[in-house]
Length: 550
Image (cartoon, rainbow, N blue to C red; front, side, top):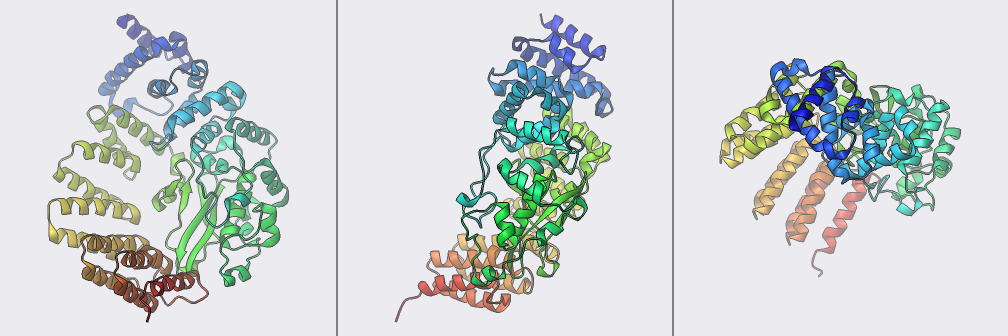
């Protein structure tokens, strides 16, 4: 039986048949596990002989590999939806889009169930718009955050509804057929489309935006400033939306502060078929929000409503696939449209194969990736995972030193590598190296990415607090304030000052809290009307409330 299965598999692929023919050879789930095993062995044998050159995008071997991967998803469905699973498996663009974009943080069972339901109830739309179907599955596989769209509006004011991805797929397919979108959806990648579907707004909200926001794609940044800024609210310190409804029409009529301007622009863009990003960040005078949008396939505009004079080092947006922050490096790579290049596709395919097969079969594929695309981060992270399991300390140190050198232009990645080296240095008790690395993280990132340096400094202060060394913690705190004087008031306050003062109060170190607050006042010099100024006043009230009377 095993030999006949191997013969059938070899015959099918040697004749360069389509993926659909594989399913004709194995029409029922009973044969899939053994068929997958045989296919995997044939793949390993072929690619051990041919090496990376034998695995090319759009080639026969890629089809074999993606089929092998897709079959591995069947067990997650626990026997449900076999017919739809086959039909999805016969859609090469959908299978590729799903497997190229699925992340470890995704809820695979829920995502697959969504795809099965789509195939059962909207097969034509799945066929016509496979990347849209995948994006919907990867976004709606888990609930939206409780505080969506942001924390400065009461949840009950936001017009939102439970979304059925099948209905959303049909509605969007209809709008696409009527040319109602700023882009043709088939022209967009999954990583672009997911920033189009990532909202739970009812169709009434979207329809209002399509009818009332006439700004063209080329000048869509103007939508942000098109919402009147409510200075009276800011002066009164009313940072949360004070009205009963948070409809787009209400924001347009009443105006708002930056977070409302950014929300309005981002949702209006999505309604019009324009993928958008919602950013928040800390500037000299406190928090700010702005937005970004896809100006052209592969090209993002990310600073709409961002005020340069506020000294914002970087904004934070959420990836709707995981609801985790997007790093600035990920955003940089996204903005450059790298995933649209042939080199990216090849690097992604080799990395996926390496990750699936492990170090023994996959090692040379990662080497090929790094020769082709030296900054292809998934390949580096795959190798890092392998090393965490089996690597010796010296090998790990060499790897992370190479990582730091390679990504020296990207501060957040450089700090990641430096922090790994710091962990290794602490583990072997190398005090001078620990101090040197801590200083590197502080000094090298102080100008361009002082938010990272502040985070590193805060960690040092925290270590001293955990060790009960409050004198050392106060010294490190004062040094940090001097280091960052005149830079990033918001980051410095929320990343260092507020945590230190609150921790001191909680630990009964009232004098340390009071001294820290006084020093922060001198360094930050925040105006009374700024967000940081108001936050300092609130913190001071906490300190005073903790002081003994009399």
